[in-house]
Image 1: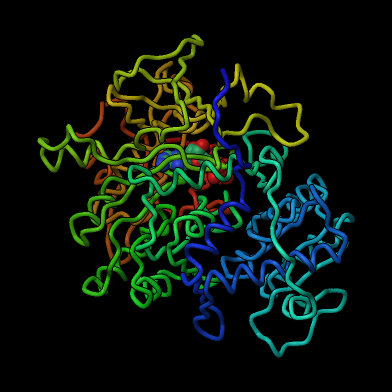
Image 2: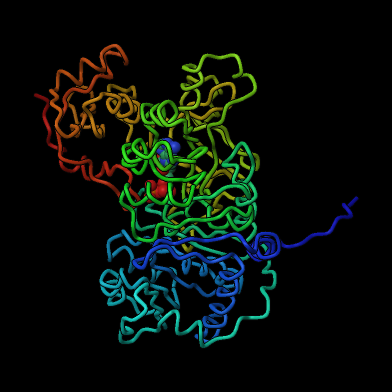
Length: 536
Ligand code: ADP
């Protein structure tokens, strides 16, 4: 027997229609060179309709890829609305990648039109010289008087010359809405293609209380870049749930971000741990004016001391989340359970340090080296595998990585335990684990502990080759300005916190931990730098 209910396509157009009807007066504020610029959702969506006309006039049709090379700002959001709603595919390019990778990605995706920030023109020009698929280049400029670059079209001029398209019709829900390339573990970057349906369902999930709980009463600062993993879904999340959205543009210094938090009375913000490490001090200074009710942190493990500083000193809980480009990206969230009502604050902190529990809509399991599912006892370790409606089923035009997708599950390459309550605790990425004498050591745990030392600014732990144990941990430590620290200080600090064989063989002091394009510790660079390191 069939159900007798209506069926409407789940998609971006449905989110946008709802935003326009229910939240039209809510706002998007962008920091630009000229100061803060605010527009309502209605105005922004009306401009997105014009953008759709512009793109159509440039020959963009259903399924065509429109790339963006932009910071977080209102025009980027307009592309987030216009491109999927006209049936084309929004392709956000990571502005921090090397030009050769970017050129590969643009050609692989066959992008037809690109929308580029004027401030990023020097980088883009080098990519453009290597690709042949782009038919039109639209430049977004926050300096209205500056002359148009030769061979390009000016975003604002185009918008004023084109009418609004009448409406955004529904696109079939299985069709592509957006795409984003991930670094992948081997070979070329891999294209993840989000469908209208996956985007809609992920956006619904973001508003649920045990996920990010984004709601109409929130003002959201999206620090995570719109060019990487859809800014964790926040652009669509704010439109659907009616939260005011604040976008930092290219002004990403911790002080500038803190100023936005204060000025716009931000209640929720999201960023990778390096962002929150940098903002701790400015937020401490502004404590009395901070209205944050919680923040989300994902992308790499949150150092437990950082989480405690936010909770205890600022009264702002960090929601630790986990996910990846292939998973739209969010999957797990660390929120307390009813049964935690009786536990001590310290015990609760230890629970919430974990990456959290899977949101409804996603199934999760850990699989051991023997290929069998490992028990949820908080001890057994296995690779995280996930399946669900916003999880990638394959990569775009890439046969080589079929082993990533097995029996309908995505193999994430992350290694974790899951406790009986379902909290995932990530041990490491498979490639970052230190394999010592047949056993493994979690570089993430060691880093988290070392960063708890008051004289340490940052720490990354990598595996270095060892003749007897095959690999041993090496701690690369950045000392806080004005502090002094020796190898013995670090080892002594760890001694009562980990098993003896987990203690790093050596500690090297470095100026800064190299970061990836999205601000994560770049251990590849450290591994290369210290590949011949011998412990002293
Ligand atoms: P990449 O870092 O390769 O550019 P992603 O942004 O998709 O691509 O990164 C996803 C990876 O980031 C995950 O597979 C995991 O290793 C790591 N990660 C994400 N969230 C967390 C977290 N909360 N704790 C530890 N690692 C995390």
